[in-house]
Length: 268
Image 1 (cartoon, rainbow, N blue to C red):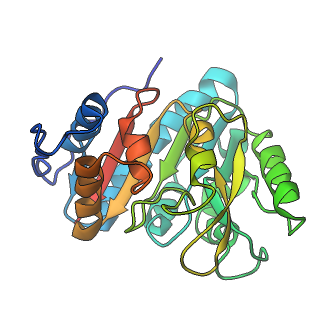
Image 2 (image 1 turned 90 degrees about the horizontal axis):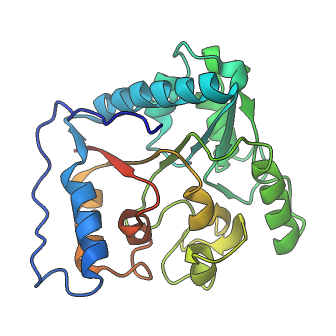
């Protein structure tokens, strides 16, 4: 059973997303789907409000998974945006010892490197009540591209699937996880036929070497949230829909797919 719909946030309705043929020429049906997702976005006046609301919904989704099959799984992003979410979520009253947590992507750096997503998750999410959760890092140390992809895949194999919840962020260039435009690995990362769970990618900014879950792996979820802050990123979403090209804006591949509902949590 899918989680119940989330009521509109307190920040008022989102800006209208024009869906005229002039803007939606290529992939009309997919663009309409993406436009509807933006039109239904949860909007909040401040990042803390968005983080709290998303933590509330994740608590419900994770609790449902833990009760339904005795284990629940959560995938989270790196970067700065989710810190407030993690700090709101970690104190929630959940059966954390039944929750398995991993990442949507990772930088190929040492576990104690400040740039490590795993280090950030340990510092801000695997704390308080959530310290009882089972955390599965994606990067185990450099063993070559194929070895790192295999280790990432093995880590994901420890989580119950389908994942109960996946939280994604988005960069100003429209990337999700570590799936970047203009990356040679992009076709493989966005492939709808790949059997790969993980792919080595290269970011335009340091640290360049990354590991990312493929789009097909991310979609093996019951519930997906896209969590973004700032008017510039909202504009990127609008541009992604207007362009309707996942090669330029990988986030469009997420918004236009119909396998799993995507819920946008946005704060100005």
